[in-house]
Amino acid sequence: MSIANDKKKIVILGGSYGGISTAHYLLKHAVPKLPDPKSYQLVLISTSLQTMCRPAAPRALISDAMFPQDKLFVSIPESFAQYAPGSFVFEQGTATALDHENKTVSVLLTKSDDSTSDEVKIAYHALVISTGASTPSPLLGFTRDETALKTSWVAFRIALAEAKHIVVAGGGASGVEVAGELGEHLNGRAGYGGARILPYLRPAIAETAEMYLAKLGVRTLHNTRVTAVVPAAAGTEEVAANATLTLDNGETLRVDLYIPATGAIPNTTFVSETLRCPDGRINTDASTLRVVGAGERVYSIGDASSAARPAIHNIASMVPVLCANIKRDLLLAAGQSAQAAGNDRIFKEDTRETQLVPIGRSKGVGAAMGMKFPSFLVWLIKGRDYWLWTTGNLWSGKQWTKES
Image 1 (cartoon, rainbow, N blue to C red):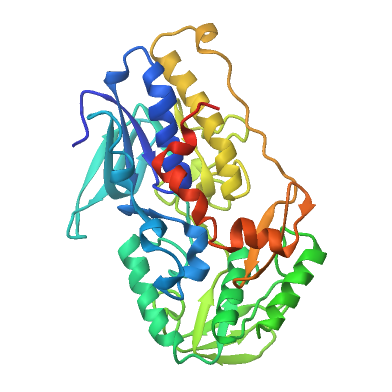
Image 2: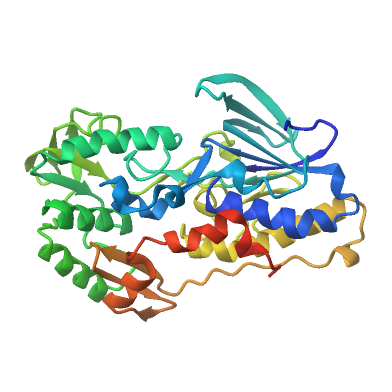
């Protein structure tokens, strides 16, 4: 199935939580309610043919035996085979340029043999930017596609079998989770550079996490940052490389493996700087989720968006609001009156303390909606399989069967 030039295209960039959820929701609840549904085509573009439960990476990188692979990685095209022919198109590729004034996006498509073809320019009627963010370490998510991720895991696992000293840089959730998983797996050591770990959680919870890590043989270094890595590609392009790390306190560490888990960089370089915030995220109206200054019918959601703190629970809350506003804008563009199209729906982020962090396969710390959760409950909700139990309905669209 190919992109139809005679249809109004709703283009979604990004094939993870935000992009896939938005696509399902629009196909189920927005497009069918437009005056002429068959005149629209939803085009989903992702760098990878498969989507994955990205939060599971800290444990999945150790061994394929940690999770059932057919649940960890799911085909995007197969997830959308349920919709009417012509209503949906999937293209594997990378967005390279957005011309928001002329309403086009340029995409470098990927062929079946993983080679890239020429750029194509797609004219959009509506556009959703959900391109996410990339981690410094290619072990923790798609820096390109599923093949590249699995290749980096294989190389890391071979080196892990002989590793004695491992440094994990970064004290956010990913860094703590990686340290906990590796500590439990082989009693490794980890270093972190902030004043305390888990800055989104209250200090008492962070202290409990540090205690659990210590029991797994993980040493936490506070107020210390990695200032130099030799070789420079260690941990990023070369995941299995030995490395010499220089810390800002002058200490030098020689390590068998280095994992930089120091945050993520938004995948937004294809977007004009005029539409981006200083941190690289898309400048998004936090109430309506429309991109500020991008013209009509351009939106952003997820880690690429400035609308809320990057978190899966925030994305889940955004989807119904985003899709309701897209539907309203499409109805207005189709000639309906503002009264008939209804009012904007307003998103309001829940800023209460919410973060669950497994530490190994039996412990965890965290809070939700401002309430501290006991270790057992963190394990029960997330630590058992890092949210894998939730993704089946999400990828298939069953989570969005009812309009909410």
